Length: 148
Image 1 (cartoon, rainbow, N blue to C red):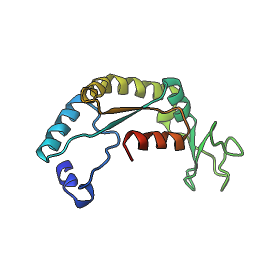
Image 2: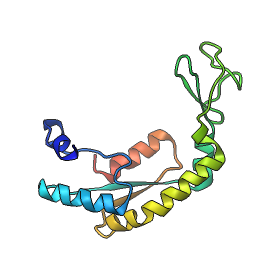
Image 3: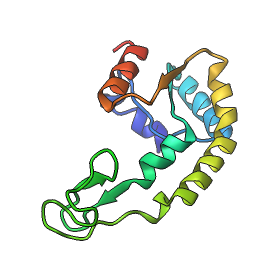
């Protein structure tokens, strides 16, 4: 499936993978597939954010189940902590955004991806980006690291 997708015209000048590969085995398989296609991974963007900040960001998310509007309890709070500004519906949070769950997810991520970062860092293609800045600034840093 991946091979077919990369053969589409819109991938001819490059593509972005978000969240893949996640393991060293997947990275090795991806490298082989790309080599078969005459391509290679040019850059890996690694957003560096301390665990406590990731937990804060994820555990603060809220969504209106009615209109879909997103909030963050610290960075973009609703006027009333419990309800949507647009339609007054009670806001919800995802069960996997609970602080304990986020910490567990991050532990699993670290266990499975540490080797993956080393896999790509040997080619000096890992672009480490400080993810503590604003969304606009982080976007600019990513663009600069990728030469865009």
